[in-house]
Length: 165
Image 1 (cartoon, rainbow, N blue to C red):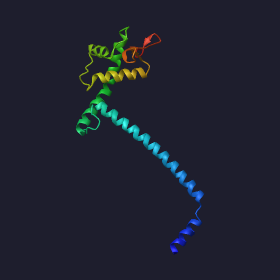
Image 2 (image 1 turned 30 degrees about the vertical axis):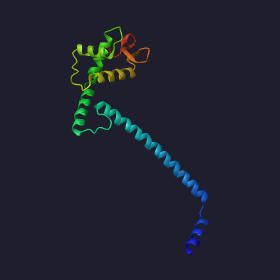
Image 3 (image 1 turned 120 degrees about the horizontal axis):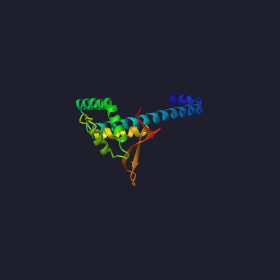
Image 4 (image 1 turned 135 degrees about the vertical axis):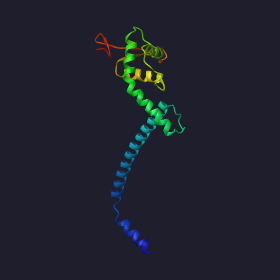
């Protein structure tokens, strides 16, 4: 009986509008946090997926630390040697008046004497470099009627090719 009296007394002095206002503010704050967390989770999932793809590890397959370390070291070596590949690709594209496919560019790079055996996936290195050069405005992608990339061409700037002095 006394508990009922205390409960009644408690609820008689509660400011329900204040409770609603504070609760709604907390809900809004928590929803913002959840939105940021969801965005971060999405970004991390994409990063993991991209890293797995680069390492050639299927989704769901566990990776060994030793294998990861070796492949990461190999990728670091690729990045360090990237400038040589980039310049070789510029040179191959600059020596022709016709757009070249990625395999043709790869052959041209090999013909220049660049050793591609050091790369885990040389074709991916060529494609990634071409994509980067395209984003930098140095290379133009040529697409076929169905929208697939057919070839690449070097873009001229002030009557000189990018990468030339």
